[in-house]
Length: 508
Image (cartoon, rainbow, N blue to C red; front, side):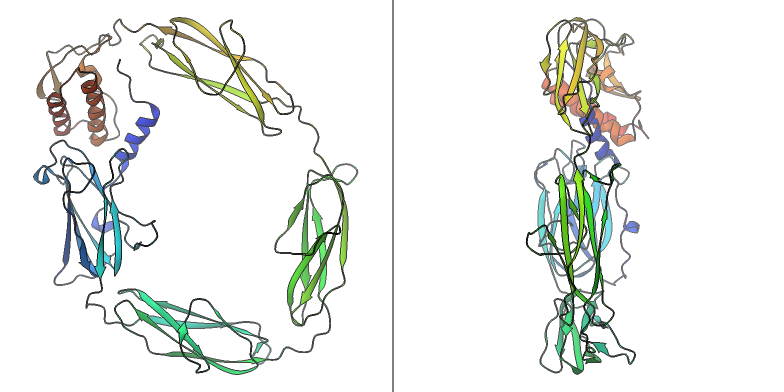
């Protein structure tokens, strides 16, 4: 028998209905060229591949044309999307394009957008749930429009003395950008030793005066002028004083000052001369461990944490120590929280037709849920592992309870429901016209009874509430597909009904 769409199907349909056509105005602005490149994709009734798609293009401003219309062979009203992949490694990810088109939309299935392509490979695909694999890629080669070299800068950072010299070391970071074809390579050289790729900041530690040169090259082959930064690295002042180091213990304490459940240890060190190089801690007599962030001690019992720090001159502080006790949290005496939801197709009286599904939920934030049980009517308790389906006609009570890992059992609860046999008149105000009529459009398709007193027109439900016109068309497509599968309609009759729904203004 026919069932109205489940919540999951309805959510999927809503996702499709809310997919907006992205106009060119919503995409990044691009300069206008006298001869604009045009790339065209087309789609038809096939849901496994695009009818046509480009394989190559030139870098630069490009008009994207996506047509999914009757003219390109789409005779069913099936929507398709053209989406550029911005997540898969190995492909260009600088163009966010997501166009939804169908033959009956405001543009009759033909959409345009303007983007800027850069050299490399782009991957495109259809993103509507339920479609087959509609994907492909095209290669963009560097055009001759980009004649501007990248912009490149360098920044020198580090601890300075009063004269502005860097104490002990300096770090040089080179940054480049290119609005045309994009940056392909960034290079640097230290003190005329030869250019090398700049893949991470450069650390210069040699005492004396230094010069770092830098440059960048874009994908079109344009190389920037060589830039340069100069600086001096001086010897750190003599430091024979170790760092000052301390530790703090935090957490929830009981009346005796013990930490309940866990204690968090934070180690802090300072050194005003050469600076702190590292911090370490040792739990009991275990190995020394590099300290990078506060750490937790959770094992019940007494604990000792030793700690120390080393400065950049190699001075190591005396060991410090903190002692504390961790105790287990008090026992869990609170039972789980439970609830149940009943779902299924209902008649006008609120009774469940054919069957009802009971979904039970239990939560326990302390020790956690150990088991959930249910019982139907006077039956015995049964372990709950999935939703319970009640398919026997009559009024039923489904009882349920849950027990946590500390042994606490929740009070028994129950839900009452009534199941009725299929049949009768599920659509008392049925549309009994001889043919299916949508708006003023008579499809000529016989308006037969589909079961339970509901006609084809009743299931089309043109007086229902829809988010937009597309949502109504997709609802009609889903309903009639089910009727074709059940042998109520032929594929030709379904196509006539879907076309009439597409031509209507329902939902607008």
